[in-house]
Amino acid sequence: MELPESIGGYAVERELGAGGMGTVYLARSRGGRSVAVKVARPELAGDAHFRERFRAEVEAARRVGGFHTAQVVDADPDAAAPWLATAYIAGPTLGGLLEAEGAMDEDRLRRLGAALAEALAAIHGCGLVHRDLKPGNIIMAADGPRVLDFGIARAMESARLTTTGVAFGTPGFLAPEQALGTAVTGAADVFALGAVLVAAAGGSAFGAGTPMGLMYRSVHEAPDLTAVPEGVRDVVGRCLAKDATERPTPGELLDLIAPASPVPPHPPTLQVPADAPPPLPPMPPTPPQGSYGPPPHAAYGGPNPYATPVPNMPPPVGPNGQPPFVPNGPPPAAPNGQPPVGPYGHPLADSKPAGEGDISFMAADSTGGVVIDATGVTIQAAYAWMSHQEPHTFGWEEIAAVQYAAEQGTRLRVTVITRAGAVHHAQIRARRSSRLRTWLEDLPLVIEAYR
Image (cartoon, rainbow, N blue to C red; front, side, top):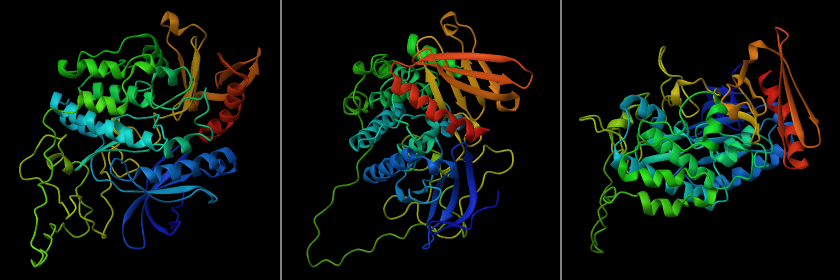
């Protein structure tokens, strides 16, 4: 596909990633600042619900600001293909950092948990629910973790993402209410935060395997907390409570998990005589021509309190404590053989190609379900997961057709027909007719995105 010259006045330099619902480009403002511009697929533009939700969540995201997130700097929900631009954040994903450095100890877990609790408090305070908090959506910036893709990404994935009965997220981090397609609140983000802390400790709250297997365990089985240090095991377990009302709020979690010795604050401001001349700010270190702050892993050795210190490798720091702005040259692309670059110029968690692994459509009840994503279609026949039978997963290359229809009142029937002629069915019960209508409206959008 030919690279667009510009999007909304931002000069496009290269593609950073692409998925079933859109493409992300590295671009620059007229003043030379790097931004990540996300562009929705054109076919989504015809969905009035998508545009309405996109517009509302762009406005909400602006209120969150950039302290805990990648700040939204511009957007056009009315464009032929709606787009938004966010600031570029230097640093690896949490997934990339864990892959490079291994599990965190208790002190680093406490700092990570406290920072993420603050971020969730800010996001929830603006009326947003993230719905997909995971290591790949957390950037370990020099000044602390930043949570990416809140609200906005959810609008990019579905025109009716908040409708009960349609779940989006990543199995293994999904709360039980998300896996079952029931109403989702901010408590689902706290559940995901608990699963993130288990991963940061070197474990996996619900093991590995198929999406359906992970969903089943998140609903029916206790999390595996053996990798979590004893000092924080209880609070992580409370985050992973099956009942959403039993999980702590972000504010309560901050009280429970914040380290006894917080990150040292900035020195206090001293009173300066009125007649004293103002001091000149220190000059930031000058990076090599054409660089863009630290490369993805350089932030490991800087002032980041979550990374293991590396002597003599501090990242360049500007007057405000941030990596200095250098308008010349884009962030480096991942060389051959290295993990693929994600939407913010950093290695994607678990080295997955952009757009792979994220749930695009999921519907489930207590007996079975269906998952449709970039890899294909996974169906769990009725009551199969209760007897621990493996679900059927079909890649798009082996699928001839995906059919769906309403039947028996509020039931959705999904049929996968393979190129070899095999036919597989899944039937999911919706609790209300409105939920069934939503499933039937969303399915063609998601299937079309991948066919």
